[in-house]
Each structure stands twice: as C-alpha cells, then as structure tokens.
Length: 130
Image (cartoon, rainbow, N blue to C red; front, side):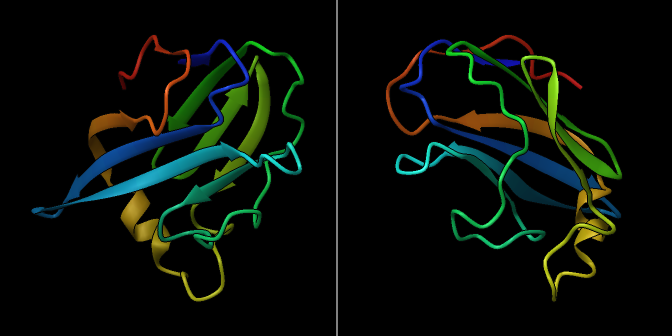
C-alpha cells in the first residue's frame, strides 16, 4: 500500500523487475495527477502511450488522504484508491495499438519492486511485498 497524505504529491512510479526464461527486464507503472485538469492518469510501459493525459483513472475519490494499492498479477494491473477500484487493466486486451505482445512481458514473475519519488511530499510506503 502506498499512502500520500497531502495533495502535494501527485506522481508515483512503481518499477517491477520481471523475470522469466533466463531473462529479466525492468518495467514501470506511473500514476499521476495532471495539475491543470486535476484528473488522475496512468502509464504502463509497453502497454500504453507514454504521453500524459492519454489514459485516465476512473472514480478516484476526492479525499485529500489517498491510500493506493497497486497490484500486479500475471494477467492484470489493478489500482485501488481508498478501497475504490480505479483501474483493472488486462495486459492481454487493453494495450495500445502496436503492442499486441506486451502481455508477454508483463506475465513474467516479479522478482523486485521499487518506488521512485520525484519531489518532496508526504509519501508513506506501507507494504511493497508480493
């Protein structure tokens, strides 16, 4: 679980080291809030366009305190905010055009997770296990 306690922190990067068949690669998921529109968006490497303001999360609660749970399985990326599911991305069907094989990357087993923080803010990581 990742918690941000103020609205000043609007960007979360989660990096996954994915391993399989003797190879590993680092992939990432970015969750961000656009400063102009106040909408929360996302980017999944190899699956969605890198440009911001292309894919948006649905039903992100307006609460100032946000508890994020980001779960990667072999088939989906699920994001919940304050117990509300805001994304249920299917790697095999929800990819951008031209990325038909992206699910082959994301189905690999996760061997390491790390977070990157861009600027100061109140960000608390409670659990990155799994």
